[in-house]
Length: 122
Image 1 (cartoon, helix red, strand yellow):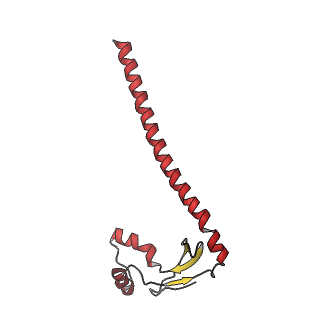
Image 2 (cartoon, rainbow, N blue to C red):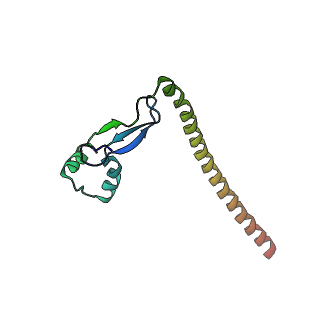
Image 3 (cartoon, rainbow, N blue to C red):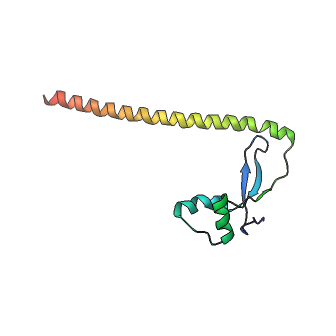
């Protein structure tokens, strides 16, 4: 367990950069709480963290959990990661298109029912 400069337990995150893909690291616990704090206008219980929050969002604590990866891993991992990200974007785009097309089909069905109703009653 690592403790950041705010005297809180540091959180473990994962780097997905080109140089350190999949490598875990410690960072300030205040990062995670920052969004909630700002949303709720929450004042931290620590004077140090309150000052740090105003200055830059966290205390800047950083440390690696995992040892450095071999050069080959750094070369191999980003390729599939980029492919995965591209596929996720494509899936999101296709889901949006499908949603729009489903809405169009529903509107056309309602229009068809209205036209048939008008035809039958007149």
